[in-house]
Length: 229
Image (cartoon, rainbow, N blue to C red; front, side, top):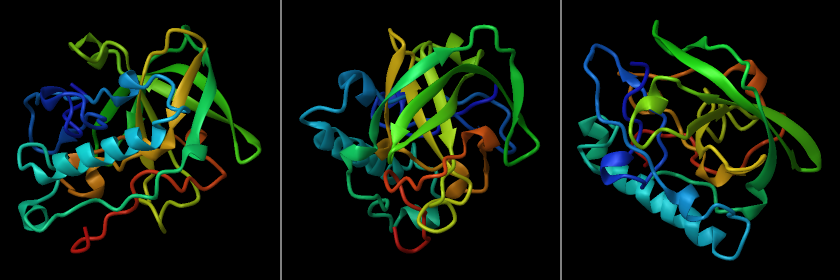
């Protein structure tokens, strides 16, 4: 299995972001979890978007405080108060056109360890941000989609110019669900760090170079500074 729990998802289900990762040295499967905020607000570019972002942040903080779901080593978790977020900014909520790629073949996505994650390009999203058009690939794990609650799970990793300064050097992740039509809402305020940003025991998919944005994304979770958060 290519994934394990990434945040506080499916058991307390639907509270947070989750890209399921694999703990080094642990071969057994671990329970998957997934948040449902996107489903509750399918179009976030409406009144209440900021409240939804704040709810997402609260859920993520709660997951990091919980010893059952937190990726933080105990020495950091015991003093943990909250993650560092950019202020909610609705200009980073975009409606993207999705072009599905049903003929795409599975490939092995490198991770931060020797493990490979089997992915397939589900589609290409195109959207305007800061006056420019951007394209990103969205992925789906064929094994994960067979698990209850993850049938329509999509994974969007990306890098941008804030990486290594304001945000985690390796880029960030977004969780999405398969849309009914040919467009999808992407809320960069819900961008989160892979677990390996907090704990080297985790194996995290490396963002493909095609998913590099040339505009800074001042939204979502900032970099983790031990002893600060």
